[in-house]
Length: 72
Image 1: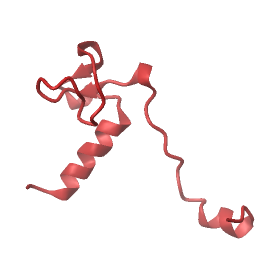
Image 2: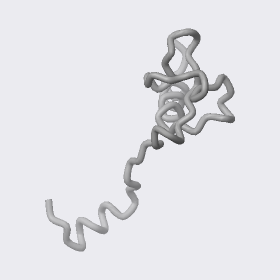
Image 3: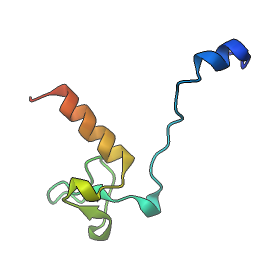
Image 4: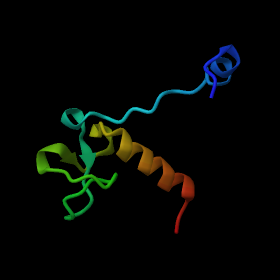
């Protein structure tokens, strides 16, 4: 696709996707599975049960999607 001025204008509102770096990621713990809410493997030092302490953009996106989907 073109990278001309029309294409740039169409994409001006988009934000580039960026995931949280592994060394800065703190995921929400999912019971005793050893995985975060986003599905990544976590260690006890890199997981929490408090949403306020989460620094994983993937966990936050998964939570937003689950909330938008509503109850099952």
